Image (tube, rainbow, N blue to C red; front, side):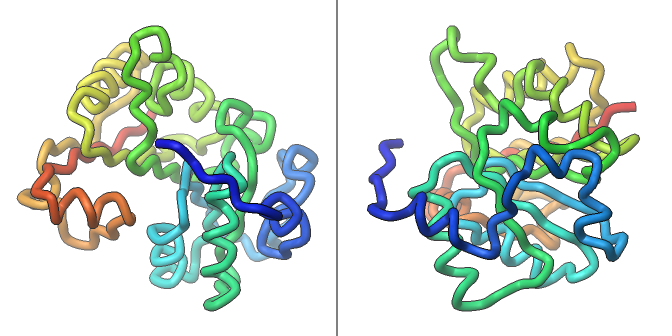
Length: 212
């Protein structure tokens, strides 16, 4: 997907109060920063923020952090937040490759991966957010038995992810190859991509995993 550069997006992000600043300096200090003891969930590659904003509305007892590396995408989420502020929703502009530099072991309770870039070429496999390399990074920050929730319309990526989960020693708690025609649909919150794919009749795959 080609991303259109949004003029002034970096400046907007730097000045916006919803964006957490100096994220690397907060490693090990997130509970101290939020001060209310609420669990922390993160979405990696949150896009325009539709999914995470709805999660934050429904679950006021959880802090959500949306992680996005593209300024031109993050700025769209910030525009939505300015229309409807949510005290328990925050943002970080960063590359997920460095996630373990921002959070300490046990600081994160749940990670959401929604419709991540499939990186279809074999030589780019380690860039996939469900690769064993990324699963190892997530293990460094999740609390004991913390979850990863992954949804995609890309069956090839999902099959790859199932193999990586097995090879990396993670435990599969839920798996469906057609979420919207399964028993697991109740309570599902759709992203912008998911809404489009469902209208097109594409099946949505979902898994939930944890590591002992």
